[in-house]
Length: 379
Image 1 (cartoon, one colour):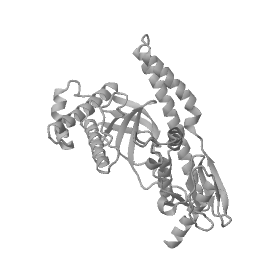
Image 2: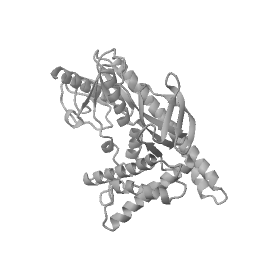
Image 3: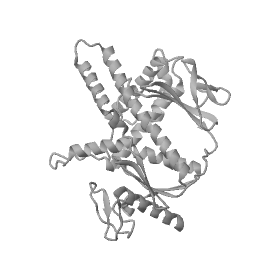
Image 4: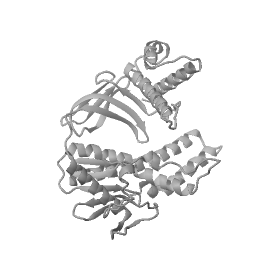
């Protein structure tokens, strides 16, 4: 596996270098040009025959092409470009297969649980896992992480279904102090505590980073010891990410199972986590505080959570409504009279002249619930 991984990593770097060199000479190279050169490359590069499948190499070139397309799209939109980078072995995640039976074959046990997979140039290996909804295997990706190698299958199935929700409509306001605040139709509120996965491990991660830095600077420490410490740190970060993903899956599944209508706001996470550093001419204020807030926002992964809610609601036949924040302004609007009054982020209490007095998040959740019910009534 490592040998195949290294060859495909070298293919990515060579293809990227070819594109950069061609651009410097005013020549344009696209995906089709590089795919046509694969045949000659396989003949010239020693060790490719019998180890690297054509589909594996093509998926690497396709991913590089997608990286360039995304780069040019960001340049056109005036965003941070993010030019495709050369990859070391640690940063090259893996490869893929475009068709079952070409380069890989999966044999599932009875009940579609566990089985064996055969990879071109590698052989037959045991496989653990099962698809939630059985179906015909289309393609696959092989990826490498801190936990080892994994095979991700794309399966063609009928539309996945969940049991219909039993409960009332809810307005959901995402937050940092609480992960989410729910406003229910009976006038009550529910708060989902923020587990703060990163904060709970921050001290251990900081110590592990310092150990890695100290070993990397030491003269009498071997490269193997440094590599081992780096893997330990990566594994700890991967564990935090796995806990975060598990929490979001369970929370989104529970919400979809108990609320047939969920109304929330569309979040622009990129804008929310923009740095306050500023420029040399106009330096920002409260930069450290904003950096801490950005870290807390990203620790909750709101975009991934809303995406889980979106597709799970579709599977359950529930309504998932997203309000445009700039139009509705749920955190500034009063759920009692509908008036809009700008409130700083530090103000955690909504107190309106109309007599409505609620927590800031509770008021925003109530505004979202009222908006969602009005949208359904008007549709």
